[in-house]
Length: 308
Ligand code: SF4
Image 1 (cartoon, protein in one colour):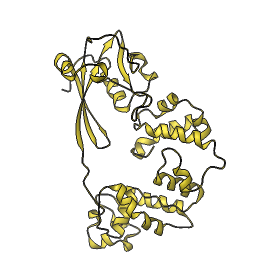
Image 2 (cartoon, helix red, strand yellow; image 1 turned 120 degrees about the horizontal axis):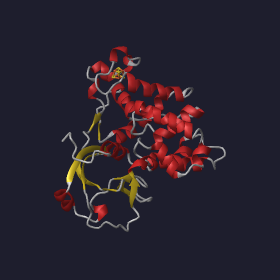
Image 3 (cartoon, helix red, strand yellow; image 1 turned 135 degrees about the vertical axis):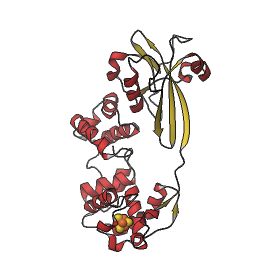
Image 4 (cartoon, helix red, strand yellow; image 1 turned 90 degrees about the vertical axis):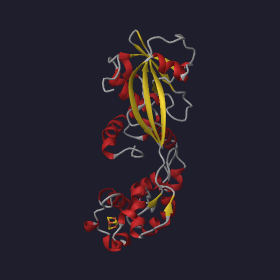
């Protein structure tokens, strides 16, 4: 859950998740719809699907793996998660290297290598992380590094004066810790999407992504003109703009304009990906996080967004 999500956002979801699935066997035996419903609001649903697949594999393994290789063979588990699980659960010596740890290591050594991104910096600094790892307490060591990065060695204004490793830190001695690590600036691409709000007899028309879709599989969102076989202009020219919303997906900053269409040129649909959902029963389906929020705001509004 913490991949892409902050701790304070994640905590209530984590509690809800553990109440529903206290162990891997209970998760493995749940249906995908139930799993996705528990994840609703957290976004990046591939994490939920992978965890579900992982649980299904895990229950067949006896004994479960205790090394990073074994864990990395499971769905959705990369080097960081594998190292965290095996070091904290089994005491296996494996270093966790994420953005926080990269920052600490680059500052300790004043490493001025220009890195393309955090992933390539993590790869380059992994040998150093492994070298520094406590062999007797790898789990505690990893947690201490995570905590140091999160609470002391901040990206901006690190708290060097109270830092427990200050005497080893070259960047702090040089007086410019914020200059490390040298990461290339992220390129954010702007995108615009038109969405259609079409309501009839208390039901809303939604698009459900195909179950094999790479992103958002089986999740519902407001349809785009393309989903309805329409071109964008015919929607934007003849309909009322209800709201303009923004969302971020990986490196894209997306602006979604929601247009209310009273009538559609083709009222009957053959696509199984278009579904009518009773507005009073929206809770029974799984919507993507942003669309759940936006639809919740717009239900009953029925007119142009007063904020615009
Ligand atoms: S001394 Fe400062 S820069 Fe160095 S690790 Fe500590 S907080 Fe980070």
